[in-house]
Amino acid sequence: MSMQKQVLFWSGFVAAIFLLLWVFRGILLPFIVGMGLAYLLDPAADFLERCRFNRFWATSVVMGAVVIIVATAFFLLVPAIVQQGIGLAERLPGYVSQLQQFAMEKAPDLGALIGEERLAQFENGLSNMLSGGVAVLGNLTAQVAQSGATIINVLALMIVTPVVAFYLLLDWDGMVKKIDQLLPRDHRDEILEVLRDMDRAMAGVIRGQGSVILLLALFYGVSLTLAGLNFGMAIGLMAGIFSFVPYVGFLVGMVLSTGVAIVQYWPEPLPVFIVLGIFLVGQFIEGNILYPKLVGNSIGVHPVWLMFALFAVGTLFGFVGLLLAVPMVALVGVLVRYALKKYVSGSLYLGSSAVSAPAGSETETDGAGAAGNNTAGKGAAGLPVE
Image (tube, rainbow, N blue to C red):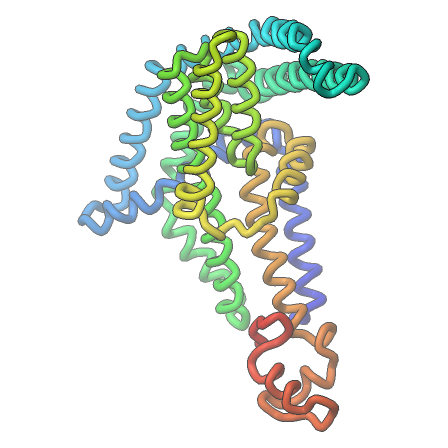
């Protein structure tokens, strides 16, 4: 199959997947969560198989442990978290008003420092920012309530998701073997290389970044609660969950918790600095310990593209799109890197004469030695030529 036909085939395949996702976006949530859970738990089931469990019992033990953990967390933690979240949403407009009043009280000192005109611009900008933030949080809460938090959807998520995860986990190795059998023999090795890169990217997203989100949510939630901050658990969990977008979780959590701390503790500055210190420590741990160790360079996507994908896919698919955005971007990144690799080793980039020349041969054009070195195993930018 020529390169052009391959591009057309895979482009059509990706377009068909997007179309199916868009058509069935209303019922996809439990299936997507189930697939992600099965992928996350497959190494644990494989470990139990190596310990002489058969696949059925390995899957049963793993899923049973997960159900027990989730059920315990649901009955012990979720009611308190939901109560804090509702309380925070109800009191958020009051916090905004109190912060505006606090800013007005400090306005004379600021006016003398920066000037009355700039102070007025700052007050208008602060008011618009706070009002916009409240509106965004309100809209987000309403969308989540409509798409993912109704009674029927929650029950479907709790019932269908474990069933989907169980059967996928049970048949995971068989599905992998079946896909391998269906690969075209002439391109099998090359496709397997791309699939291995996709697997590493997905592992970085689901296993690595999922672990980062969980650990940060626990750290922020527990630390803010111990610091005595009102609604600290809800704010900490929000900061941890939003941390899958670089710096967004940190900034949202820090701004929200600092505003609550100012209203709650002022004129005592020490608790406010403690709250700020918690987020600075959390950002240091995330950037220097958790992310390099658990995720590394497996995703390989620039943060700007990641944020664009979150907005774009979230707009198209709603709450389901937010779950799909990061894995989809990671997979698309693998395909783009593969396409660039093929491009820099093909005739469109190197020219037909460079591609048709025998490997290791030297041309008689200008810079013969350099050309020979470039074509003897490496193309531009140090990428291997196949």
